[in-house]
Image (cartoon, rainbow, N blue to C red; front, side):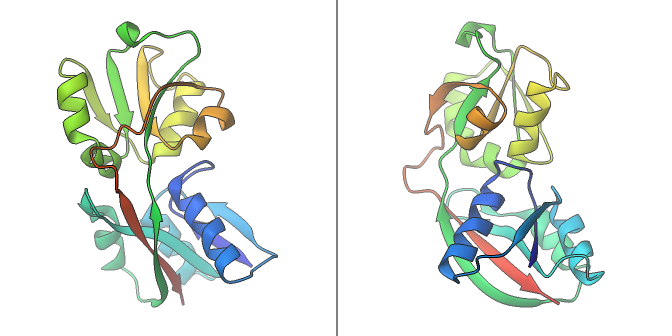
Length: 185
């Protein structure tokens, strides 16, 4: 089974896909990293994947607008809706100190979920939106994002992309859940 997700390796969408497969006892699957909801639904409609998994709403950040706009473009069936716990981390390149960080990069939804944290702890940092939390982590590692930047991403991205954890649990609310949709054609 090919499962397309709106994220890169290490993303919460990947975590959601793994959770979905475990919950439904699906043992043979391949995750296709499509980064955006639009591309994920496009692949579903073109029969390039069997299922699409993407976020629709967060308990703190609200509606994932990217998903709503993409859903309006395609016809599909909602097979399932489920929630996973979301804990954001602030990650940087190795050997960076907090004082080195001038820019914070992440997906717009993650930035919403960390809005107060950013205002209180990083009032002078430039905040930049990116296509995906895990993609931001990968792009920081690959020096596409300035070396004096940090990303807000899942903890899994630290190991996966060889980044340093500056701070864990940077989301504004302790209870921070995202609802995901499993879509089929």
